[in-house]
Image 1 (spheres, one colour):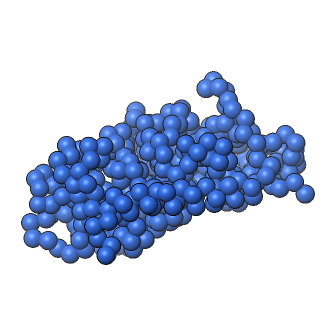
Image 2 (cartoon, one colour; image 1 turned 60 degrees about the horizontal axis):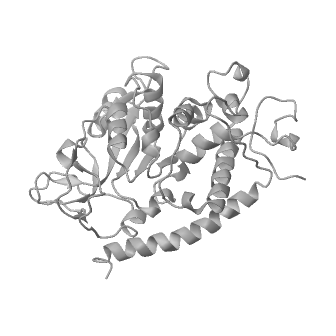
Image 3 (tube, rainbow, N blue to C red; image 1 turned 90 degrees about the vertical axis):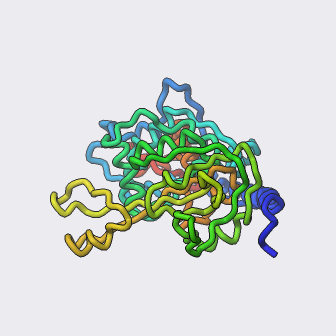
Length: 351
């Protein structure tokens, strides 16, 4: 049966998806044959980053269409795929390193502003990427508001093999109070039924997750778990170790909702607890839009694939691409309107 195959299933899953992923990534890279990557030192900005940076005076009055932004995402994926093909250590969910300045620039870019005003994407952070997450944001600052706006419009943040940095980031941005606990046992998939004594919410994970996750996680000191009592209300528990105390979960999905500001026309959207959405609708006629923050305290290879409610994009590929990519000089059609224009989009195949 499906249950009881935990470690073996995860190992087989990793081997199979690593091979399949490499083929898909190479195909994506081939589709953008004109792409060229040019490395930059930390003191330099790439043309792509300069043209996308929100504060850049070159962007004044320029129109960045949906097609432009989607092409940039596609080109970033292709560049990441090409790198993974040349360096297998980048493939799958293996540990990656992204410069903190590059990750910060991603959140400050017009590209992320574009993403934060639309649905539906899942922004994926591979193991190790959380070490590059900003830690000095003001909870009411523009960057934190933009991340909340991203999730509040039905998008998802996914942290794979999350550790303390990911927990701190979620706590900061979403005003949560999650606390990690020592690992003293293995974990089992949370049932979709109410269990006497277990205060956590019954799991409502998508079928694409439940069919691919192992039933049990063995005792492993590398796993990171959070006390379920410290999780926000309406959090979906994927795994826990009930009836142990304190009950802990190494995998959960936080639901986060926003509504249009009913008090200030055009004002910042407001955070609403999921349980209060019906009341907000009844009192102000403002329906909730809700997204998710998925935390996996272990390395699950499937996490970077399209197993979530929205198509998955890789945060590392976007951050790296914006920081280290230039439009190829030999391909004028990479520039809107020809080689003299100032808006860059993903390069097209020659001819």
